[in-house]
Structures are given as structure tokens and as C-alpha cells.
Image (cartoon, rainbow, N blue to C red; front, side, top):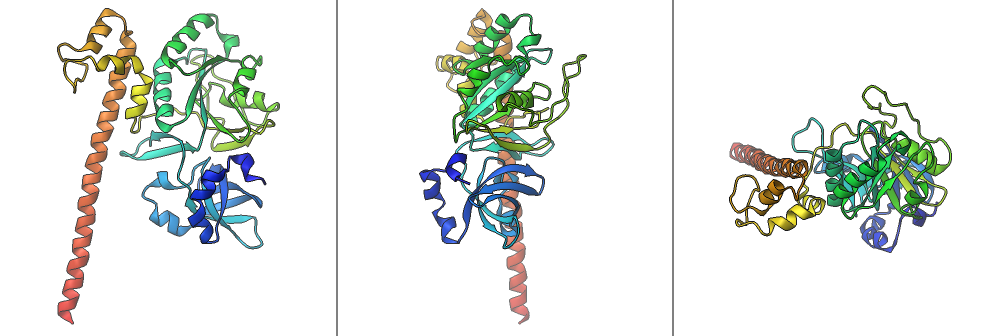
Length: 357
């Protein structure tokens, strides 16, 4: 396997020098399935398992391999297996807060160039969800492209396009249909050889169907969406990297029922540029844009120059980021106290042992 076709380059090679000194070789994670991974190295595709030391030393689960990661491996002799010893620093990533866990980061995919944010043009169409995905994509460093799928089911396409374009701002918006093939040529313009794209969105929006259409045959399972509520079931149960005939790399992801914010200060600013620009005109530098007098953002919302629902969505996401920041600070403080207690107990134990001798 030519690793360059998977995105390997001279910059990655320079960063891999320390791993090579230990006799390890690079590979890219193509599939993540619980405790095992499919990795692709020059020797071909191998089943990888994380080394115990890497598991022990990882600061969090987010530091462990994810689909799209470049990793350092050693092959197992006479077996189609490998041990994963390290993760090469990520260039970009798509991250959310773990569902049901306190202030824990969950990396969905890594080292992506473009994120196709898919919305279906049916009853599930949701501009507020689109804003959330845009903020997190920008924060992770990838280029966002909004894909409005199922145009064949939409009777008011022009108005939906206008609404999405207002939210997307500078991000491209593509009207597509996996059923009819509309928009496929435009999508392919963002899928270049050795570059990686990811399809993200809720269940039932048609991510796998779009990938099948781009590939030219059905390689991803699909299930019809319920007509009653336009909700879909998860057809992709793991994250998987697929090599398209044109040499581009595509990652499919399970439908995300929840997409809680992680740290997204930069993404929030870029996702709501008109509000951030107005904020510079507020009288108070630390204006919350809620109750202060002489607030340019509140004035714009009251005058209608900023849609009320977009203004309220901005405040909601801003509160979410601030709450998470405070929660993380509290968690860090408690963890430092815990480590101090452990160190103190260890010191006291050693001291007592010295006296006994």
C-alpha cells in the first residue's frame, strides 16, 4: 500500500521520526470497532490492538486512536495483526462532548480536510442543529460543506436553500439527492485524491446513501426513514474510512442523536460572524448580550436585523460553552486535589516505613 494515497506526506514523516527510532512504522486507522481497529500500513490491512502502555499513559479516551488517525505500529510476526503504540498529533478533528459523561471529550474522526454536514429536506430539517454542526466543524479545523439531501422530497427547495445559506455564511451549500443523483458532481469537487472527507448528521438524513451514490455501488447499508416523524435508525454502527474510485477518502459516521458542544470559542465566533462583529460595538467589553444597556447585539435582535431564533441559538450555544468551561475547570481542580492526596499518602507511607527501619 502506498501511504501517500492515504494522505501521508513529508510533514507527517518529520513528526514520525521519534517513532521510527523505536522501530515502529506508520499506519492509518480505517475502522474503529470497540477494542479493535483495522489499520492500513505499507504491508497492507492489519487488525490492530492498542498497547497496554498506551492505554495506561493516555490522559483520556480522546487520546486513543480514532478513525482517520495516523498511528505508530509494530506488526505481529506471522499474523495479520499489529500493536498500536502511539498516535501521531492530529491536524484536524471533529469533537463533541461525550454523551452521559462529565466534561469528557469524544473525538469522532481525525485528520479530515472537509466535513459534509448533511441535512435532509424533510420533516427533520433543523437550522439550529445545522448551526451546532457548523460551529464544531470550524472549531475542529476542517472545511464545512452543507449538504441538503433528498431534494426529490422537497416542495419548497428555494426557501430551504436560502435559509441554509443564511446560516452557512461562507460555507458552500449543495442541494443533493442520493436517489436521483443531483449534486453528486458538486460533492465530488470537494473529494480530491489523498484527501479525507467525513459525512456527519443525524440518523436518517442519507449519509450512507450519498456515499453509495458517490462510490457507484451499494457498499453501505441503508434503511428507510419512518414517514411519520422523518426519523431514521442507525445503519452505520461504526466509523469507517472508504477509498473512492477517484482516490478520495470518505469516512461515514453513525447518526448523531446528540451533538453537545465541546470547547468552541473560535468556532462560535466563526459560526456567528455577524453577531461577533456587532459585539465589538457593545458598550461593555464583557457584555453577555442579554441584559446590558447599550448592547449592539440586543439592539440588532430587537430591530430584526438578526433573526430572533438565530440570536437565541447563539446565546444557548454560548451558555453551553461557558458552562462546560466552568465544569472542566472544576474537574481539573478536583483532580489536582486527588493527585495531591495520593502523593501525600505515598509520602507518609514511605516516611513511616523509614522510621520502622
